[in-house]
Amino acid sequence: MTSLTIGTLAPDFTLPDQNGASHTLSQYRGHWVVLYFYPKDMTPGCTTEACTFRDNFDALQKVNAVVLGVSTDSVSSHQRFANKHALPFPLLADVEKTVVKLYTVWGAKKFLGRELFGTKRVSFLIRPDGRIAKIYEQVKPQSHPDEVLYDIATV
Image (cartoon, rainbow, N blue to C red; front, side, top):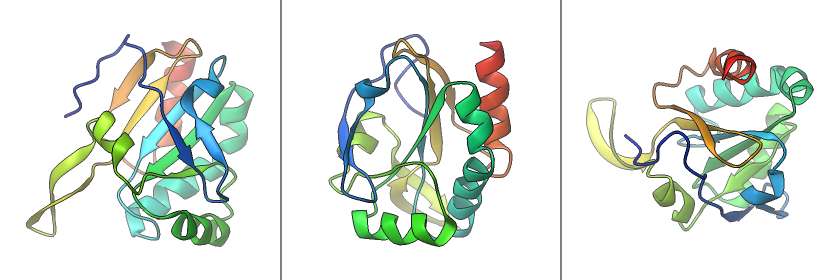
């Protein structure tokens, strides 16, 4: 469970994307931002989530939304993942685990009956003014973009 709350200013950060370009959260003020954290490139759930965002990318752009995916994988891993699945949005490499800890999405989790540490699948919908509009802690990769589009229209 994240310690951030709805209505607070989303913590700012700067990370490189799959092409090595730097992205700072505050550079997207004036846009809705879907900041989604995911465990690992090329895994089934993460691929489903990324591809559903890709498939809904035009609809998200029409409502002035930017999609930013974040994991602790490397820039080169993100580049392979983005290229393989033709992802049209930045995947940000948090190899030092700074941002996953800042957003409190790094921690113990269960996978195949074992407990391990890693990035939890959590997303934040950030308003154009930089404040958190919604926190998604029970993300269903297949339907997540539809949920985000609904929330942008109703929050």
